[in-house]
Image 1 (cartoon, rainbow, N blue to C red):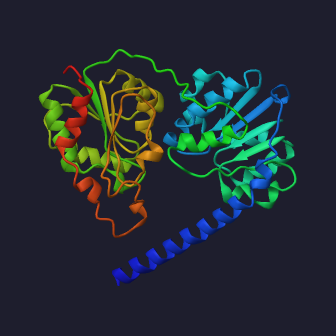
Image 2 (image 1 turned 60 degrees about the horizontal axis):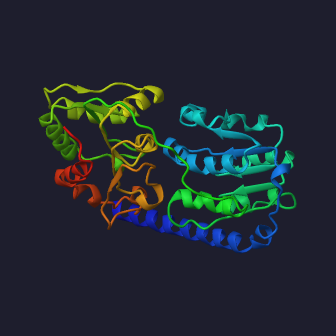
Image 3 (image 1 turned 180 degrees about the vertical axis):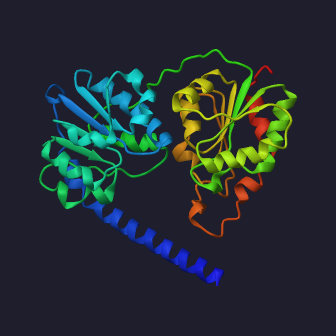
Length: 347
């Protein structure tokens, strides 16, 4: 019976992917007449709105995209609409930041960059009468709501998500390059290990977490096990109780976690938000990928190292009951220490 449910689920899943792909292809092929007509004068662009409704890591990773816009439209007023909890990661940009739920309070916009389009915001955007709207979603962007008042772009999704976003800028002849300037921070003899993720299938195996703890205990490091959900807390508490060595487990705000990352020598994390927090701070970072695609979602930073199992990278098996977790089951302490040694950290 279980196999029957699995097979039905897989068939349904593949069918939904086929339908979505067919719609994407249709909308993409029918949009080129709009793309050719995008023309504007910088002096006429007074107000720009950038919209991103996503998780922590998905939001942090648009920072370079925003910097390119700021540099090009240096006299325009720019509004960034995001989950307001993530404001601290963009405060250095010195632009107006509002909560995504307050998008309806925006009074005017000449250009709108909508990186996660939702139909409920479109009726309001339409009343702003923008000269250009650039969207990243083929299906929603081709909705009837757009016809007759805007220009639409649906870029192909090739490579890293930053390259994907930058295709929007290239349509406006906006130069794209890496603008983030990394700072140095005074570090203590401590590390962060983050074992959890958006789904339990991303959790680092207990055996490998225990091996890492034993190794870093031998180096006499302060070990911080961080978490984001009650499930993650239970998971790391079950690991901690096997050790007499002092291991710090503390509930953090985003601000306190950000400060902890700045002070830490090394961060080891699954593919989740804290990895992007560490990357944008240019910390010594090792990200262990399972179902996610590192080619698309690799965090910022010159000191970011990636561990992945080539057979499973980007497999998306969190949607598949039959996943054997081969990617993480094959992970060994040796693989992690080999990456750690590349940093040449003085213990």
